[in-house]
Image (cartoon, rainbow, N blue to C red; front, side, top):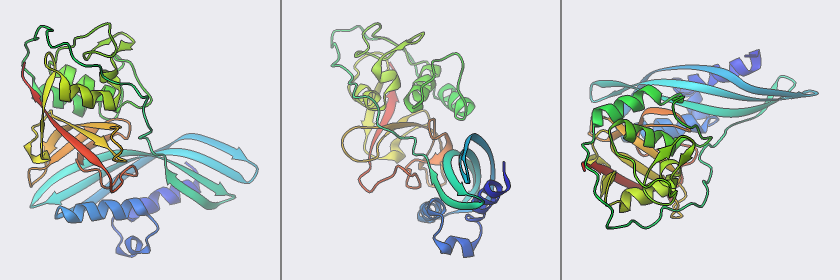
Length: 288
């Protein structure tokens, strides 16, 4: 990592701990995160971060670098300590050694307009018992990497949640109809397995196999349950997470892929994709 980028990287970490730099308003992400913690009566005790360059290009005096930062936040809330983690991908531009641009690359791009089909009410019910512990253990193991046993997507959030549910014993069904059921076979998959909006529709409508019940509040969720996000509030959901812990007030902390996160507060108010129009769906998994 070159000296200019290293200085930028170190300065970003200081934003979370230096009152002077917080007030400067130069780092929106720090402001958003600190405001989010303040709403929950939580404090950042310590921040650790490490980074690496993913791609670099040079054109004369101009240099463009895409780099990744892995943050670890030690959080204190009502006397309880826990660690939140997230991985952020950013792009910066330098003219000679002067920084002229630095921004996060928003990973929550729109997914294909694929829909989950209406269910066949006469399909035979598949019996299962959802193992929440195994689902959470899987989410903890693979939140920041990819399991080579599964297909990988550039926008991997829903594929990751499907893998967690599958690890918890949820049965697949519907093959080979991609618009029906929830399944993965080698490199072939249902829309509900890999597309955020289709998973949201599946969880709301499935009558057999993997099933879920929508609840009205996040504090009703259990470990291993799923939250769906419509960042723009336009009716098309573009992100999913799994509940892996609760904070000191009993609110969900979640793990996710794409913007890889661990034990992140469920509301995503500190995300670059957040808008005031955001909508959520809360699904608790039902035993078969």
